[in-house]
Length: 399
Image 1 (cartoon, rainbow, N blue to C red):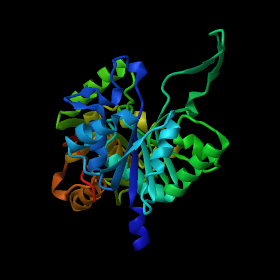
Image 2: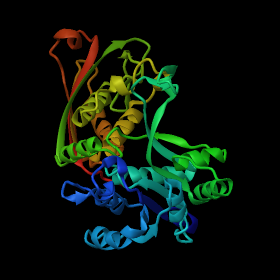
Image 3: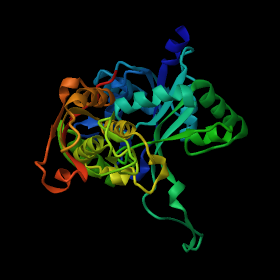
């Protein structure tokens, strides 16, 4: 038990020693105001709210130490910031300076750019929960555009296969001994990389890539600041509403699974996954509220990863996508349109399944079943359809 408690001692090293030359505003980018607060404050507040972060070390330039202590930490009551370290010439040097300030009982280290203010506290905690098993994790997003390499003459030399390419983000989280050994080895060998994960990779330690968010931007240019201001305004909306619809054909030789419950029936729903029409409609409602496409985009039927997968797992992944953007599910209302079989005796279990995955009280999940009075494909017992409405609230209810 004592060992488990020590593993929860996680320290964040926040890098804010850059001068921000690309911003071209005469002020270091981390201190620029966005939504009435400095960018760095927005970032630090996420770690202040993260339940599994014990303390925070900020790494800044020497001339900014007093300002950060008084105007950033003191004025904004950032109690988790225990140390302000002086950075080095390169980013890697600054991380090493932060690592040298770790308390002796720290077991997990998370590094993060001070100008990535849109990481959610819930996602910070999610990374920490997973690192004990994985050892090293970085956030990232799949590349969407075609990537080409060019030569010194500006001409294209190669078009890269983007299917395996990801854009790396922070936070990056490591067991303490892994990140400290990697930095010490790099320091001794005079090796410099652009992020901490690369140093760990050099040590032969696998680094897991976890899906991040396209909104987890690094504010480096004036255009980034404009985008950050837009995202901040979007997130000031405390509630979002989404509607979802799904239908599946009934066929022989398939299990009938609705709401995570297998229902005895001579026909089941046809689909690439387990074809749980109710959970698919709820997933689409959540994604709709986020403005994040639909389940077909995120879990395509061309990807064998999702072949026969339980839709309870898909719902879990969609819930985590909402958490990345700082939202949790408030309530769910769904109507299952089915003539046969009758669902009344299974609805309570469906509600419990859904509420458990979404981490909300069962009273916030309402499932109704209605017939189509013999009309249409539902009335002919050819398929089942579901409509769902979901509300999202800012923040996440963590267990």
